[in-house]
Image (tube, rainbow, N blue to C red; front, side, top):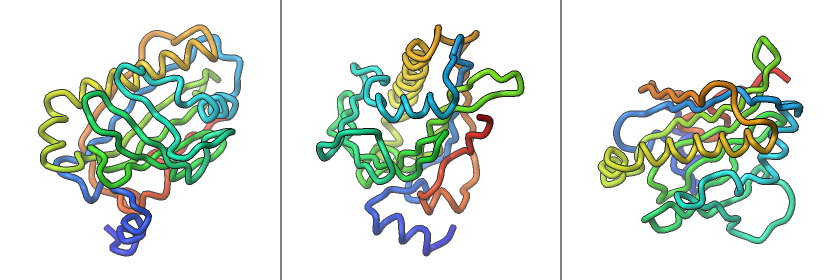
Amino acid sequence: MSRRAHARSEERGLQPATDGVGPLLERDYWAVLKGCSSSPAEVMTLVREQFFDFPPKELVVFRYKEKKEGLLAMGDALDVSIRMMEPVGVRVIHQDAQSLTLGTEVGHPEAGRITFGAYRNAREDVIFHIRSRARAGSAIDYAGFLTTGDPMQTETWTDYIDCLAHVVGEGIVGAIYVEEQEVEEQASDAAMDGPTFIARGQ
């Protein structure tokens, strides 16, 4: 881990995965979007425009910390109200034509990043993919995650994908896939300045 990269994260008020507790988990949620006539870049423009509309509001609500109009963009800070918790913060730490990445701020129950991206597979289907790389933010958060956090997170992001899929097309093809694995730290986990995956295939 680069000490310089870690220091930059702390200066920005971010909480990198390298500051967390417990195993570093990489979680993937993805699906093929059925009947999607939009390009991956167009899907991501919609995500940046309507990001707050897709999560299940009974579980989590996102809001701008400061009043803003237009697309969600690099540097934007958000308040996140998670069920049964005080509001916490995330920030847009990376954005390009086909992806958007949020990093957790200090005090969030998780420490790390999550990327939302769209791309095409070899058959030209449009895929929407969410990947997080994170640890629990503290020992208390780790205990809570083991009991309620993991199922809640899975429901949040699978509902997000399903909602988006019905806006840009006819839902999903087959199922929403969910995968989780323990991974080793990378330099980007300390730096908090890039995506968790590269969305390629326009």
